[in-house]
Length: 236
Length: 236
DNA sequence: CGATTGCTTGATACCTCTCAACCCAGGTGG
DNA sequence: CCACCTGGGTTGAGAGGTATCAAGCAATCG
Image (cartoon, rainbow over all chains, first blue to last red):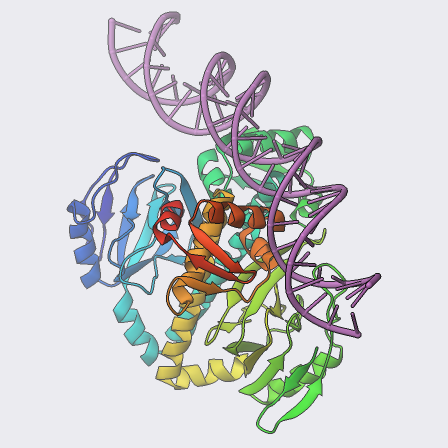
């Protein structure tokens, strides 16, 4: 696994590997810190992360944030007992890692191989106040993040497993090409940690929906909605 | 129950009553709409809402948003079967009701009697691009909302009742004067709907924490943290 | 005083977690 | 080629936590 900083010239800056989900995590300030230092200087640097690579960790500096160019990123928190809660998945053109405090409250990891752009937080704050269009774009991005977070919290509260999974599937389908066929980039474990369920419950729920004829599971990472209306009903 | 528009001159504009929690809700476009029409024109109007009054409902126009001057506001969503999920509580100086879409995804209601200021969304968007300080203030408010929403979703996923209640108590205590004594403005039902639990479970959990000596419940809306460290441990 | 509201407590049912076994596809090496 | 291993996913049985239903309590209000 490696992180590659393409910047404006293509060059490899640092590489690291991570264990998952509850093993030891690379310390902030290891080789990847060199990468970060560079990106701080170079606003707009392009970075490549291999699948399951850590992009940043809890407690890291918040002076840069990111935008997804390709692939999917998850932001998540680890509890002391090893449980993981995924706060959100971030896809193409979405920003992530923007925080107000000095230290990161969450980690970010590559769900798939992915490309992201790093921005200096301060440089954008400065230029945003000078540049109206940028400021507006920026604002709408954050609003979008906020709404995603709100929807997620609504999804997690007091809803059954079927309801959660249905909502998740509809959310995925909305982003897919035909609105029916979903190609999952994330594992069942990712889905479980996103929905606040166990992997077994996610699996069982999907199987049940398949038995009901609501969905089809042609391949392990492929889901086809046969009866979206039934799912929508469960979404309440 | 009444809504009073103080605007710049003090006058009563409209009143309405609501039933709670799963009764019939006032239609958008009833007398309160008159109130809204006025506030759209008068950016910065001060409004008073009695306890349990609806400030806006799902599907309403999003052309205004609010800031809490005093009291507490809850934003929430109602599921088809009557379940209610509270997305957040909003206290003094917090903004709420700012959305990107045309229609509101949530409702907002007064938890206590409260005073709010209504702002025209467009007027702020315009002046924000002109006024740097305002723009920055605005941005930080939204970031704050986003972080609150994220924290909330982390709280709801895959955590036990004790963990949820502990986190909630610590959150409340942080805002209180001495960091130990909490004066609740919300009911047990509000807490339950915020944490994704039932009112019975919230009650039982509080009783258990009291039996453990972790908290004291001197009055029905008063909670005193006897052992905050124990709560923090549960917060993981 | 009775009625209402908010809260607490108890008994039981149900849903999801936990632990375990198993399956399957892909990769490796003899 | 096959045996073996690994990682991700599925399925089953039982345990445990929370919801549900129901009763009761205290404070408030008309």
